[in-house]
Image (cartoon, rainbow, N blue to C red; front, side, top):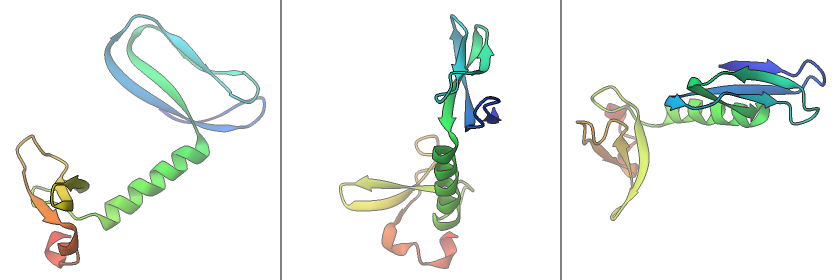
Length: 114
């Protein structure tokens, strides 16, 4: 959903929106510092989670680092680091939905995978 500052104490949060088939009840999110209600919703297909700003920034920084340092698959998806019986490797994020491309971690320096 986005960034939100508490109107009372000024603490910054990220409100994460999740979609479910159906939720039976609504709810609300409150500031962990002062208890001020920051967001409320009715029953339906959405649910929300409050994430502290510093934690969200760490997550975004990690995603940015992975996007620039992890190889791209031939199908266009980013590859993700996995562990298998023979050690660590990069596998397509689209596995098992059609793409089975894997790359040994030591082969990543090869420019063809970027």
